[in-house]
Image (cartoon, rainbow, N blue to C red; front, top):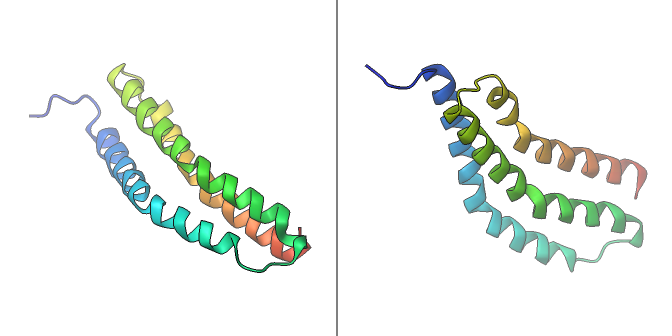
Amino acid sequence: MSKRKNEKLYNYLLLFLVLYGVTLFILPMALFGLGMSLSAPYPHTYDTSRDLLVKILFTYPLGVLFAIFYCGISYENGRYKAPYWVVHVPLLWPVAWIIVEYLGLKFSF
């Protein structure tokens, strides 16, 4: 018999937060690759989108850490609805990355 009150939510949060935590181990390699790609010759028309992509990648750990701490604290305090939504906050970064990449290529900014 488990002592956890909402076992389904606990497993859901654990799955997503472990996956987000694993992405933090990949982040140094992504940052290294991004640094190497910044020295590649690009036309000056892509400077804005490249700067936005760098800022998105550098702020990704903030979203992951926010989700981990907020979901853990709210679960322990007995709030079970907010963690369902907050656990998906780190997914906003890949969505923003795709949008900026698409708009940068489409409109050359």
